[in-house]
Length: 109
Image 1 (cartoon, rainbow, N blue to C red):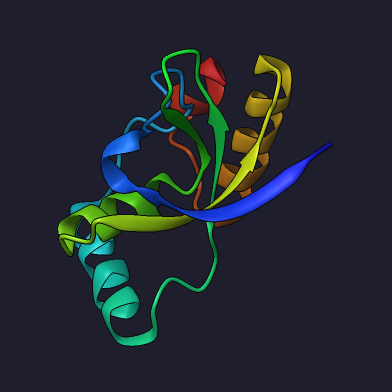
Image 2 (tube, rainbow, N blue to C red):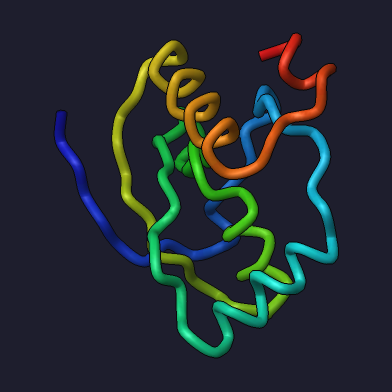
């Protein structure tokens, strides 16, 4: 699997409409933005290329939102060509490790 890390224009990055997590705590996004402002982005987001020349978020939507809140123009991203099944596996693992999904999100995932 080819892995590439680069700085992507934030406008080329799009959330996954099928992301298991539907609710993002705005207070926590603001806290994360403050952390990124002080420390920088410590971990790149994970994206996969789309057919339309953009990059869909696989992991890191909270980081993406925080960078957008800060008005950053680019975001460090790990780019991998992934199947839909691989995308879902990455997303479920990340969401279960980070913060609990609510019961509806868990059922949908």
